[in-house]
Image (cartoon, rainbow over all chains, first blue to last red; front, side):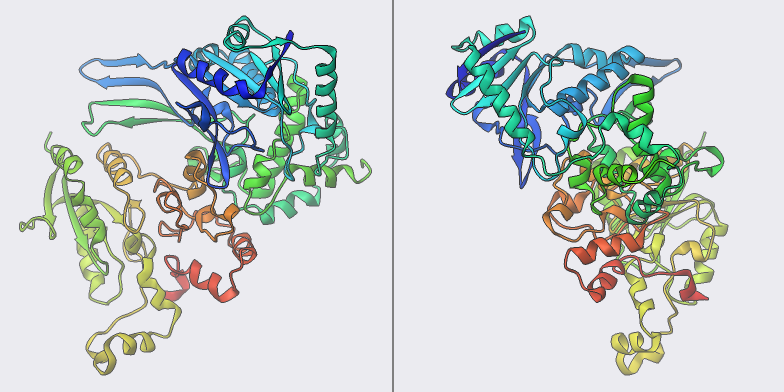
Length: 342
Length: 247
């Protein structure tokens, strides 16, 4: 990894270069009082002073609705695989979202070989930027704010200057599009200071070291916190839809109006929606909100940790901010770990 | 194979859902290639029985509606409830929240005895219903998708995922996070979150999901500054009907 610095005023030139060099460039842009990642065609549209976007950048690797197969119902049933993957750049990705993409990469590229995901991922350049915590953020409780890989470039805002980590050859090519110079010790120290002052900005914290949460979960299967949260939960599914590490989906076959052709499509889906566990004969094996919330918490803090040695929560705070009832994993984790293990 | 014979009928309603069906002219013409329409008061003058699929709009509000709906059922292989009034009773069921005599006097004054009426009910309280196309009015894409499923002999879409799902996937700003009350979390989706996409709160026109957490929804609405009375009227715009209304 190489470190360089460039003047912040050059950032627009860098983004303009990206827009000229790649078919699609996605960046955070305001939407009302929120932010979303959206395609930009003008460098001035990108705004990096955001805490989080409504959906994570995962949507460019595994879209909310993604055509997988086109089929035709002639005398022979014909299938055509749909793989769409133009070169794309996602710029302004927060450390938590970079870590989330690494986790989903492992699921979709290694543990499974998902051809659509692989095609998109291999055509994606990721340019990260350091985070701005707010009252819903708790990255500091579940991960190292300093991400070491999973990006092509990573920028740290040092006021007038931007320090950039270059992790790939493509990243080097991009940084060569603007004036830059090697980062001296002074700037590396400034980055450490910036990270340290960020760590002090977090107001939400999980009290237990996150990797010890599985211990706190022992004997807590029937803990009253699940029922308490279940009474508040609307089962609206927003928490799992905005989560950067969720990767569950449903698949539907839809016909064109002509009724002689159609498309098989993958749609985001997940465990907090009541119908997710509805199976044949009308049986629903997780038919109440308390059991669903317990399942989600275990997925984020235990099951994946057992199998992949990773916590599947990045502390981005999206589920918390969007929950109509204010349900959040920090409160649950702290309630579980505040008592002695039975 | 002959084309499926379909028909449209209406009871207490504005007939807006049938109008919406005719309104998508281009798609409707393609659809006409797959079916024969044998009764449709809003669009054709012929009237034949022996129906494969009947789409029934409107709620049941009068004694004389019952034999007519039963006749439709007996002459149809499949009966589909079309729109909010047929599916849940819709806005017509608001009258169930007040004494019937008062409602009749409000509407017809001293002529109220000329127009007998009883508590409003969705059509599935009178006959067996095979599928539902929700909404006030129905959503055209949802209507077409469901018609395709019905023609394939499949069930209509459950739409048990709430409006929030489509709203969030489209990255529409959550109205609740902006401090506005919204019924999206407990209302059936399938509308493409059309109201929130224009900044207007969901009022629950597609009916509540199968197992709605109404207490939590009321808590959330109360947090957004609604009084108990506001919440009650908000939640009853489209969802007044309770089975005990007709017992």
